[in-house]
Image (cartoon, rainbow, N blue to C red; front, side, top):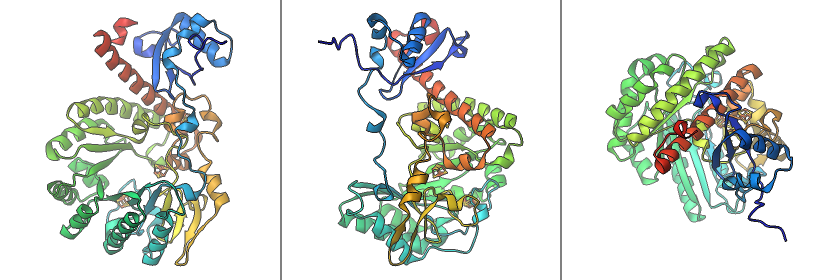
Length: 447
Ligand code: SF4
Ligand code: SF4
Ligand code: SF4
């Protein structure tokens, strides 16, 4: 009989060069990372060579194989993925009520889509009836976001109706429904506050934090501060989302300090790198930007955590998940009544609109193009050859569709470098903490 103690099942293993962290060469120190069991080890010398053999499928002796035991788990990637095969399995709905905005942000991803179009209430009702339906999905937990496109609160009556209708329908049908509202912070009043409170809607304010930055990139600093204040006073501290550009990448520390001082009740701060080909004339500009972003992000994340705040970005958040898509496919209802897989593509005036639309909502029902859905949903980590051996693959999922659409390959390569470096730095950070807790020594002292 086989001795399972000595021959554990092989983990899915990645080797991450880490020489730079230890002031040596990459062949001297590597991280062995098993994302499916969430475990990692530092390896040197013979253990690196054994790991290389092990990954390439060569035989290694039992003693060498024991080194990998702490990395072993019994999960496969499929155990983690959502079971989305068709649009009928989707758990996330986004509603884009209009294409109108009262801001004109310098980096607006939807600026080309501006139009005087507002989603018809009947289409919203049909979309919600489809989405919140026990006949459609057996999942009992759904999320619904009101988001732009434009500024959702410019269509408040429609948003209010949608929140009330969705909430009541979910309750009747025995679903748990989490509702979020993403706003530019320009509109807030007691009626909106009452509805948000009554239905447990989580507000999320897009805000570039520093007065000169907000006023130059988005405008309306004082108004947005007033909105965040009134939300906090009413027990609805919002998440704050800032877009980091080359002009602000070295001011992230200042941003965090401002948030802690000015809005002590806000605990969630998302600092997402801008997606804008115009801001990066050459790949070297993008490399420089992402390099500085990474250093500043890692620094302020630690400071934030010490002060009870969470500083996030999409990739960082995903390091604790196993994903095969950069972002879950959505049932995103556009103001025209079309269904998009990604809420950032919502207007026929946008170049990639036709590529992202897989259905339409009429007053009579929802028409889904299943083949088109399967095709777009299938653009993921499995479909991109470059992702096959990437150690960040299960946290990146092949990236977000927005940069993937807008940037050329050499630029996307820079984003891949950044993604891998961020994952590696977070893993090293976690190992450092563990080392200090267990041995009272830093990794550099131990290696
Ligand atoms: S608030 Fe949002 S939708 Fe409006 S211009 Fe700014 S980024 Fe675009
Ligand atoms: S970092 Fe690049 S290569 Fe790696 S999974 Fe993401 S998109 Fe694919
Ligand atoms: S794919 Fe990217 S752009 Fe689209 S909704 Fe997801 S995170 Fe946003």
